[in-house]
Image 1 (cartoon, rainbow over the protein chains, first blue to last red):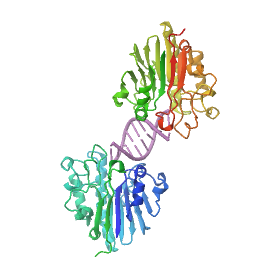
Image 2 (image 1 turned 135 degrees about the vertical axis):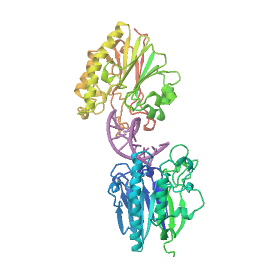
Image 3 (image 1 turned 30 degrees about the horizontal axis):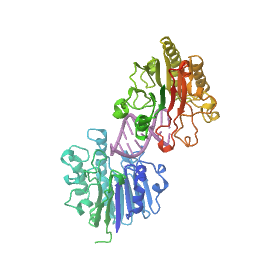
Image 4 (image 1 turned 180 degrees about the horizontal axis):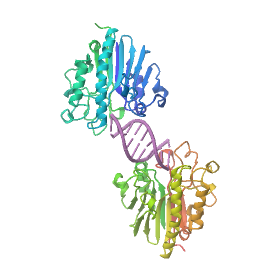
Length: 268
Length: 268
DNA sequence: CTTCGGAAG
DNA sequence: CTTCAGAAG
């Protein structure tokens, strides 16, 4: 069994002071994908940069305090790659992947976007470049007998069940028709599956992000944008999914919650 | 008896959350001069902008989040003036004065300065313009039978006894020979006196500012830069001076301490 | 509402 | 070391 967690930490330095360190010490995961680290490795305390018992890969953004993804794994990766070959996003701290036996695991932080701004155009450029990469990644992996898992903050809710008030958000970044269509193509054309949705096809959510504004957390007015996007073979081996919604506002250490899935790699 | 307090609050919004409100509620002062308010009145909670039982005059800086002086008085001022007639500093949030019967009280926040930078040049321009203003202010007041009190953060330590490590600070802004000389001229030429020093001529300090850096507060490694500068007649009526050093690091609500002096206006 | 950077102190 | 503004989320 391989257990993988994805979580947007919204600033690892802040998270580390609020409960992330204790959470990591208590997790049973074998691999942890982090997004929005918002720090260079040298700015992190030793115990956060290189925690005991983990191998850590950090891909900070060139812009200080922005983005940044990491992948922690209990075993040493066979290979590490940062970026996905698109010049514009090479040093943007948005993509890193590691190879483990029979599997490539990636941590992705897709741009958030904001309608009518350059940041939305950037998100669109990222999506345009990332879809063909995903296709090629899966094909190369398949040729080598490997599966692929792209965990992260995709910043897109796919369907109406994936956010609390879909009607009010139809013109908001993260639930635009073109973004939803694009995610549909990741599943329909690139050969991936939405692991948590396949395990829980009927329920609303489970949400993994609640805005810090207003009473979004208390009202469970959230979005399911933190995804395990797996090659179909791997998706079929997912046996359990869990979103660790904090028990209280005081115990939250990010505006996102960890999304954990266990994969039975030995299964047929 | 008229009791006047001067205190640099280092951000009134932050101070209000840490103990300023309780301090104001408990003070016996009749007039309170604030410096480094660092907020527009509209950004302040009602109870801080216009506290019960006080008349508040606010002189914010045009630059948001910078400088800003206020004067609180229990009685309504006969007149209010903001700025001292120098165009460069008119909207800099560094000077405001009110008239009370027989007395003009001002709140001053002199630029901090930093050797070798434009900020030091600005400090020097402020000093050059402010000295003649002080002279004229005292002369006009005298002609009308009034005294003058200019309270505030002067950002200059006059003598060796006015800071902890004077030798190490001889080339630092706030203890430069030209700054010390300028303050000497405020006393010797403009007709004012350093009230707290006259009441306590022999002791070191009492300091009123300790840097947040390092262990300055714990080591009492401070500076006496928050001054009551009074026309000589008024200075002669000062009967008691006190610096309210916080009893603990936890109870500090600014890097400066309130400096309070009681004046016996009825005295000969 | 919160994170982080940078200017200012 | 702390304040605040502003960008980003």
